[in-house]
Length: 399
Ligand code: FAD
Image (tube, rainbow, N blue to C red; front, side):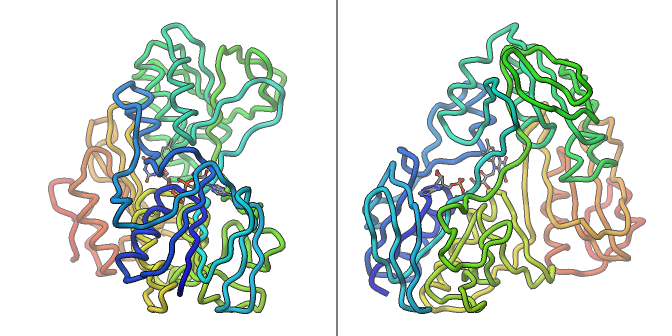
């Protein structure tokens, strides 16, 4: 393979370029990135950057060793594919670029709400620096969405003396990620931090000076941050013949599905924009988390270089909110029951999701050891003793 183009200069794009070199690719690599910065890390944006502890989160990379042409501030606008295995041409703001192999790593973009009022989102370093400047004592900040981003922004804003109100459509914070029962266990954190939390409330529109709620009520605010989720960036792939559902549909090696319904050997998709086949879960997963963007690209790069490897990791995510380290591993959508480890009123506790004597997932608050042990047990698929799991004094281990 002579030339590979990587579209998207986030973590997954950088890791794909690194994976190609580590996998022995000696041909050209071109990284096309819509942003004007070298790849940088996003998790610190809502933590250290908002808190004022960091301004620059550029990812470390040996660019000389990568021998990668980097086109910053350039955007892919379309894709024409030749026969499977024969590469194609990328339409971009830098002109048409031919390739033998293509990595799609365009990530995801925040969803916004109707209305003409100013709404901030948090995805880029510019978003973070601009928002930080607005977080001054007394600012009335309305945050729409009590998900991971909403909770982290609320944490930073409350610490800076803002008057923060979080509005959530579901019955509990984090309900869509964790379910309402577990999500509700985090509601007290908002109150303890002096953050107003209104659940079961739908926002109709963002207006000048605040939020219009579905029932007609208004919430006045100087600043509005919308954190209601992201959508994969796929618009430039319309008409390419690749199968697109919520993300680029791939096999377990991240090979994108071509017009003939078969995985293409010359096109892979990774990171927040990929809906990949998980043999472990027997379905497609779209995981919008850092760990997948870090580790999956090596598998995708190997696939592009003609080596078969399947990505089979147990999904992992963390969040830092209201002074707590919150970690999650697994997939719990179809689980039968929940077991608590410890008292959620305390600083450290966990819950685990089980099906029979199988551990499906864990949420660990201030219990990193539980997380590591549970992730190992989930990966191995070995049975556990549910009664022992309920005792926080007993390590998470197989029965
Ligand atoms: P992205 O990082 O979105 O990168 C994609 C890049 O492609 C972007 O630079 C984009 O501009 C570019 N692009 C898009 N379209 C085009 C185009 N047409 N042409 C060229 N370039 C294009 N995960 C965790 O597990 N834990 C956390 O605590 C956590 N915190 C987070 C906090 C914030 C504020 C954010 C935004 C995310 C956080 N995440 C966290 C999620 C994690 O950062 C993402 O999963 C990860 O960044 C995904 O990497 P990616 O490379 O797939 O996509």
